[in-house]
Image 1: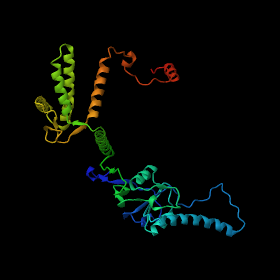
Image 2 (image 1 turned 45 degrees about the horizontal axis):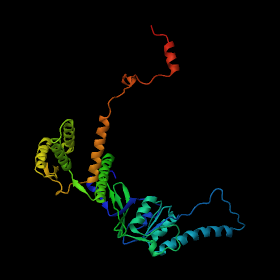
Image 3 (image 1 turned 180 degrees about the horizontal axis):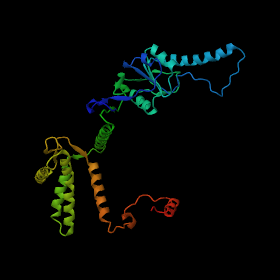
Image 4 (image 1 turned 180 degrees about the vertical axis):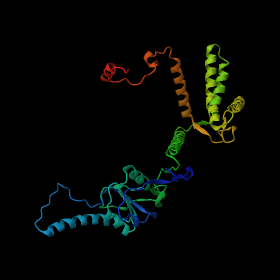
Amino acid sequence: IPGGGMEDSLLIRGVAFKKTFSYAGFEQQPKSFKDPLVLCLNVELELKAERDNAEVRVEEVSEYQAIVDAEWTIIYNKLEAIAATGAKVVLSRLPIGDLATQYFADRDIFCAGRVDNGDLKRVVQAVGGSIQSTTSDIRREHLGECAKFEEKQIGGERFNIFEGAKEAKTCTLILRGGAEQFISEVERSLHDAIMIVKRAIRNNSVVAGGGAIEMELSKYLRDLSRSIEGKQQLIISSFAKALEVIPRTICDNAGIDATDVLNKLRMLHARGEKWTGVDVEEEGVANNMEKFVWEPSLVKINALEGAAEAACLVLSVDETVTNPQSQQPQAGPQAPRGAQRAVRGRPGRR
């Protein structure tokens, strides 16, 4: 949500979605509940006007009044059935009209219609219950429950927030920032961090980050290259040197002197301290395994395999073919043929 600072971002242990379209009477509804019952519907609670192509033939005025009364009776029966369930929060994927909105407001019930299908499913997964396609025979097990419901103003938007849901296995992050670009960058960073944690939990194997594993591999390959004769020694030594790009880049991004840090890392890894990496906070080196700077082993394996395959692909190219026309300076798009003939036929000025 644009506006505010990054420190104003919220972590909601539950579900939150933007306020939907509301009718008159919505302002009179309560906006906060503790331990409410939540009812999720796929039912339209709105009086519909007759269609243009509909035709109803009546012989007496009382018959027409009976048709109108039947429509009102049907919607009131639906509303009474919903109120009888004891639910304090009613959500529906279909519209909830002004009549139903005022009816719920008079009975201290919060309602929201036109809820997005994805948001409605997330609410059901969090609070429990199920989405009902009818208002008849709604039992207690069809309702969800949460510790707190609140409609809250955040920036320029209003959000419906469900917290403390018993069935909730997810949370919602509401990001704030001064500009859309900044918020998008924070979102990408958070997504990368969450995916790394997810991968680490699934694979159950981690290594120290901050360039520690790259420096250890570099040290191992340098030692290995000394035991090999011929051109293979130069190849392995170059691969070892290329691995030092990772800690060097970390130092450059953090504004640290990369030369001093790399010299310390080479010395410490030669002594057997294999988990020593770049410490951005202290602007030096540290045991990143003890500082909980971890990376999933599978991510490192995939990165090394991808880099090696890309390098082999580039080295396998022994000749390139260029198009001579692409090297000529572009004079812009050519004029249509008719325009070219007109230009050629025009006499020059004297």
